Image (tube, rainbow, N blue to C red; front, side, top):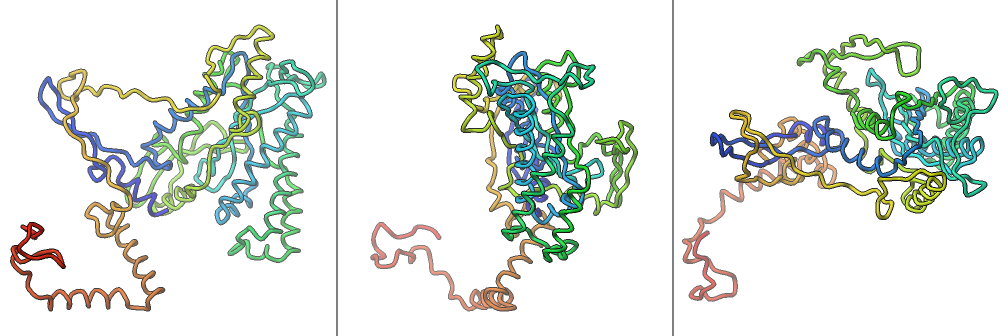
Length: 447
């Protein structure tokens, strides 16, 4: 977590190196510094949006309606996730997909697919674990070779023309799969239960905890496209802006100093909060603490693909979808060669001169980006002071554990004494490689 904050503090600063440009019009020189590239960095979200959209667009088919389905864990499970990030993330993804697959296959009789993105926050930056799923409202039929679209049952009041599955059945299935998964984690001893959740180590208390989870309604809701005229590409762009942002955008922060941070947040009893936003003021340290709750381990995958869109099924699934659509007269015009999701090469845009508005700048030099191992070492000049202090403290604690308390001080003292007693450096002409005659060409000319 501290290394993530250190990287963010150095993003697009001289410490990371960069490119130097010169304007051929006025001769002005300017520098563009490298970004940190950390997935939690708000400044690096532009590339993340581009990559997300590029992947999502290759899944999109013409004349297909796409829905956003949100699955949310109860508040006590969201709190438990703070000490069990990877297992609870797996629980959330797996339970959401299993409920989608079961409900769609049972109610609509087509082969489903989904792309899911993990979010762990609410508007106030509290722990609020949920996934957003992009789900096609049609697919290859399970009982025939036909193309099957989701249809509302006759008894359902459906005025807007959009329907995926029965929401109540989806919520019940999600709750069932999630609690079963939680019990398996407990049985295998894969849950860290401490602090507030330490009593759950008692099997009877854990059973009561699960019984309570089964007695409450879980939240999942289905959102159709933003408007009736929204195309598949517009749905992807809408989701891209929403799903690739971090816990809070700069536009929501209205005031900030060393003591307090004020930002806007939606409130209300309606799912997701009301549209009206109210100001929320937190102590700066509390704001940072809440923001840090959502820094996930690097090994935790936040975007996952399921069903027909999973890596081992995607090519055959998309080919089958295109054939079924062509059979009903729909031609897909964005077909890729292998159906895979590849990254596009983004062309480097020209940079205009900020002083004379010359249309482009000429690259005249580049400072390579140093490695993080080097930059975040407490001995490096550009290492943030607070991080260098923490890094040195961790080093001392490690040495104390491995070699005994006070080892670092003893080692430093010995190094100083050794340097004071070291004989003077001989003249350059007397330095030579061991085992070689000093009168040969292997003599060192300088020290």
